[in-house]
Length: 108
Length: 154
Image (cartoon, rainbow over all chains, first blue to last red; front, top):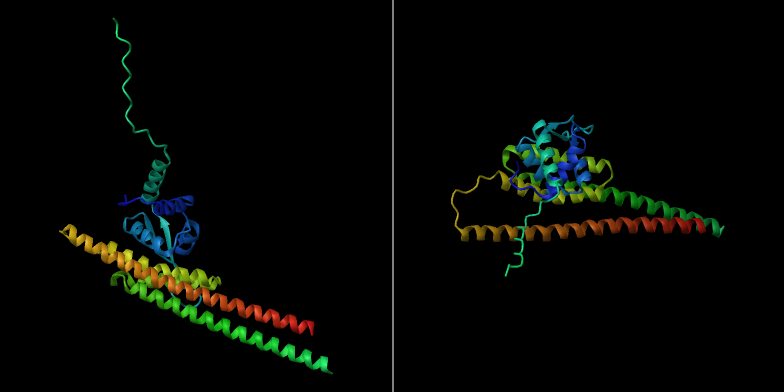
């Protein structure tokens, strides 16, 4: 599990889980999550390092330039992301301690 | 005769304006594209050598996709974020120091804060240049429209 679960990470996981088998370009993920490249690429890098995402090379472009990279959720990543999102969507439990009941009237 | 000459002159002006716009737009697109690709290289250079080339290739390819879709401003913004991305990725790949005092950690934070501020200032300047270029393109377009309208009226 990543060290910190941020809102941005959750956005990326939500987008990836919306179509689990899909291969995503970075640009598509930027559009889907509305995150900037400065935020998205460190997250993608971390997810690839953790084995949640697989990074694949696409075919070279028609111009002869380098091919784009594709990101796809791995089985491990899919399970982990689903459990994190399910955990987040559960309603928060009340943590405040219950008050002790007031003592009733003393018999005289 | 005078009307014919005026019409011809107006058409010539419109044609010249169109030509100027085409040259200017192409020139601006070229300049913008060059700057964006140079930024990608600079951002990738901040990464550890093991992943720098691969990241540069990926970012160049994404940038080309933006350009192919005529999303030049998005391409500009995309490259703006890359320096921050490369810095964060490089930071995450750096091994954590074994022992650090709180004063050292404070100094590190100050350094990081200053670097981020400088980066932000640079990026806002670059953003202003981008907006100025867009404004220039719009003005050129407006001038062309005015010239064409004048030509039609004449």
